[in-house]
Amino acid sequence: MRQQDIDPFFATLRAANPLPASELEYTNTFELLAAVLLSAQATDAGVNKATRRLFPVANTPQAMLDLGLERLEEYIKTIGLYRTKARNLMQTCRILVEQHGGQIPRTREALEALPGVGRKTANVVLNVAFGEETMAVDTHIFRVSNRTGLAPGKDPLAVETKLMKRVPKEYLADAHHWLILHGRYVCLARTPRCWECAVIQYCAYQPKTPPPGAARKAAP
Image (cartoon, rainbow, N blue to C red; front, top):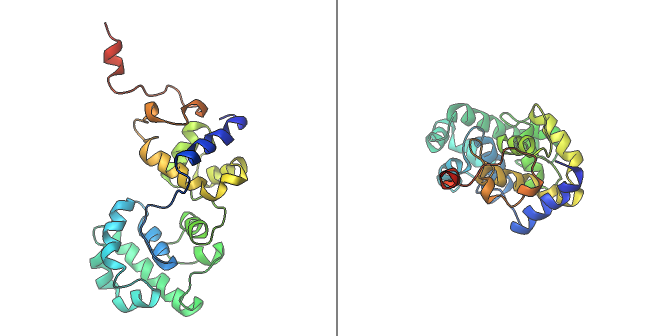
């Protein structure tokens, strides 16, 4: 993607969705952290289905510890890798209570020291909860960044680094939401819906996917 196309690319995404937000459901910072931790290799919809039952009974680190591992597993057993995630979440809650007074730390180092919290999860919490300009590169952002030519890279960190350099500052706070949603609903993994894409004119991807039935209509 040409440098001069990056600003109108994001301006178009912003015009279509001025106030983008995470599709994970939460009411406080701990719920956000827990939901993102649970969402690894799972869908937001699947996580929301489980946390709608879980959070009303345990939405603080201490309440989660009081719930106990076995009961936690029962609430989240529909989520992939739930046993590992349950252990990580309980260990994280213990650290939050014992080392942070039950509060969510505001530094990357402290967040990434929590079990089950990697760079992507830390970036989401720093951005969504604390308003920092971070780029949480998931599979959608990785695909969109490479496919469009916005920020090609061989791994998530390379893509994140390039995005932080190329995305204009005025869009940085919301950029990862726009890219995730674009990848989730338009720039799909197997068959991108190019015919519905609002930013197609800025995208370097070739060949563009034709609308369904276009090939049949063109045939004699």
